[in-house]
Length: 186
Image (tube, rainbow, N blue to C red):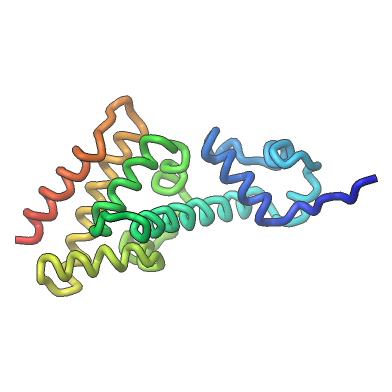
């Protein structure tokens, strides 16, 4: 008889992430994960105290995957602007992975922190703030203000992409953002 394959916490979170992407976070449950992994529900129940904690871990994993996607694109691309890379990655996420976009930006898993406090833990956001400070020759506080307002604009457009039949192209979204940044940087 072959040895049993241990079902790790990471495997469970990754399976939850795939289900969240394909079907939405509301479909992430013990039975769905067990089915995806080809195991019983026991490993899921033994590694997470409740489904809310598991979904929170799936949310954190999705945020980390998005951050990694932006960082990889910055490192492997000739695009030099962290703003443009982040905007196009977000628009692509909203367009191609609507459920993940909803999980990351439209769910109740966000903390009670302000918009900027929530984003401070991600290195790519720090690069964006530095780009704004350098490009527009403004102080960090002004860059944070511009970043917050522009990010809310980007997320508004991406929410339209993720939740309606409207589909702004990456070029259209970048034009909206660049126009806003040009106005804000004056």
